[in-house]
Image (cartoon, rainbow, N blue to C red):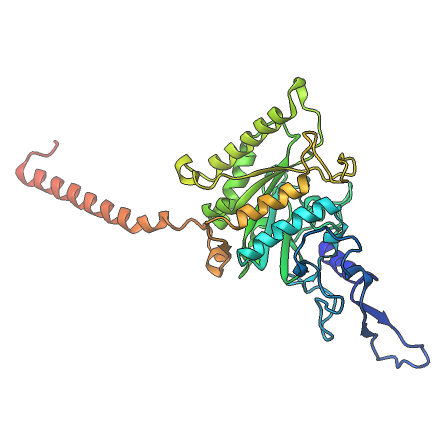
Length: 374
């Protein structure tokens, strides 16, 4: 409920496309509700100094809005009304230029809607990564606040392109996989399409254990093995000094390989199965202490601007040859999305029946000829 309450509060900010104007008490009947008066917010106008050499379709018309006169600005549970992607204009000009180029690539691939599912253990930075990706606080994050108990989707629109990002509760409860949370996630995703899965963990965690493999196995059993073809690994808390004097790139490489191995083992992925679709890895630092370069872009200790890197990896996964994951009712109701193995069950049962019949016939023949055991 915390997530839903926040979305309602966020939609009612003064910067929205609608203002709530109440009449004077003497003029307003007690039963009359506030009326919505459409207005144009200056925050959706094109930036004063936009990045150069960009197509005109990246800048929305000042007289257009993502909400019609009759639409309410309040989000509706699992299907919120897309809002103008105002956070896109808050990025530094250098980051905006890179993001517009990547959005242009999606347009060229006829991708007008992109849905990103964010999953992982609690406390790894899923919500903070979503806020950083959108350039605005769509999910409230505090040091002493527990995660929301239900999934929340934030929808943003820009120049005809709609981005849906789904935040989910942590998949671990009291040291075990939280299967109840997985069921809630599956029910929330019913009839939706997952274009990209962000599997989030921490870079500053120094080991991988059986619980990591169990989480991956639970995700695989819920959505099928092919979901890992549409996934990328996000490692947060990347602004760190590696232990034991290791170089940053070497440490991040070893940590990445450890998590990727857990994914392969947990999802029972054979190496030859995914040779054509390696899972990309992106390092992320969401805190305010993240360093910046001369262009005011957030950078990692190795000097890379990580927000464009994240969007580039998302674009690569979204446009790869693998099919997006459609969450059907059959997938939600089933206990295991990997139905291919179930096709062999009738064949195995049939073979067992023939073997049993053959053994019974052999015993009868032995008894009839007197060759059976005494």
